[in-house]
Length: 135
Image 1: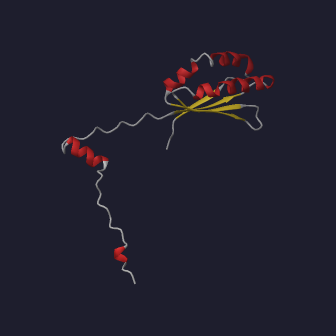
Image 2: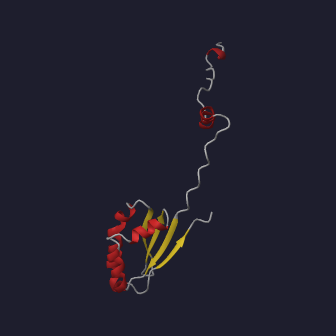
Image 3: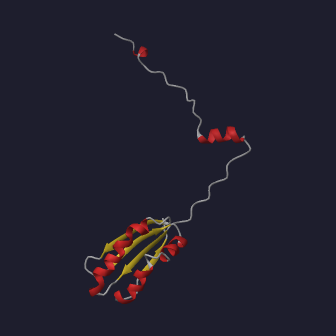
């Protein structure tokens, strides 16, 4: 019968410092790094777009055509197009870094013509709700 102790691995002593321990050794006991300020909450937008029936396909295609460009904008985290199942509406779910990122989006040369066309295409103005996470 073999003794188990010959085959057991001895635990290695920890030689790595945690980041806090490393910081205290580098900075000394009386210094500490300032707390990181929390990032401002993202801006979420839910937009209901109600095209006139004869312009539905044009409105949808216009949005599809700018999805990738919009998603590539530095301040855009999400830009997703949805179709209502039976209401003839399009819906955009958007997440932006902040209000400035959304304002930047609205000023893009590939967005302005869509807003101009909406004046003819839409049955009613876009209903956009701006939100932040509540929990």
